[in-house]
Length: 409
Image (cartoon, rainbow, N blue to C red; front, top):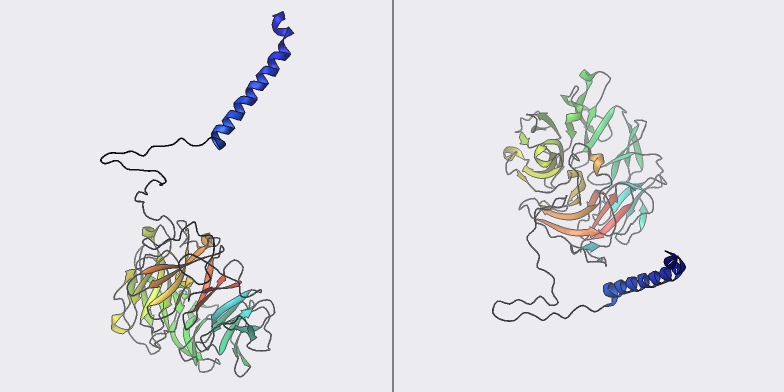
């Protein structure tokens, strides 16, 4: 025992030196020591693996909001393309202030919007210049409904006040505050609306001239205002739709004309019906959710004109909402599609508020879908606008209301 006590310090020093040498060798073996030379196998049936990665095996379905069967960008791409080619794409912001209700300009070459910072309306031309539509200032507008010609709009305020403003004549007209859910006729001369009252028996669907005159009741809507959608079809055939439950998973959609026409209806496979008219007004793209989709929204398309109403209904296989889409022609539309989408998002859309979207092109006639762009930022896309020449797509980021652009060609 006295021997070990006498040389205890020597043993500790020796042990420390051995530990340092051991750690040093491990570092050498892991980070510095050359890999052993592997002699490629030879002989019949031998396969060399030198310089190769293992082959990929077939994978399962894509378990996100990405449509199955579409091209997925390489995760290795680090430089964003200026023009969309299906991968990482430059997505510059084109406004510094929040842009409310952007829409295609009357010329079709740019986008116009309400600037929430200074209360003015602007048109953004192809060069990115913001040109005032009027010197008039409109403070605290919270919704804008544009006419198809984009020369006038209905402005709605938080206190319920509504005005129609004509950007050509610079005139404004006050509309009744109990009117809501406006939509213009194709020529912009009339509006469809819901007239709401404290007494549900006085709630009606109506049409009027754009200045509020010559109001005409179309149908009473009672307590069912939430199931009625003011939506004047581009072909001037119908002015609204309303839904009625068929069972727990299906709804029937009825089309309302302005002259008591008896149009056919169509059944949709799900709830949360949200429509988008094709430019010709002969087809609808729409989103619904059901237990079959884990309560996620999914896009469908169906014929919606005359005797063909309800024909050629099919699932597009894209998990997104119709209001995240915009048509560029009668058959082609672009949609912001969430990269991931949790079950229940159709029932509770706020669940998707912080998701990021990729941009897809969808042919509603063939069902073909193609990844067009992966934005170079985490954007939740809304209010998509495609220029008439198909060259640019604008959208607002839902979380910031900043307007961004993607060059399509």
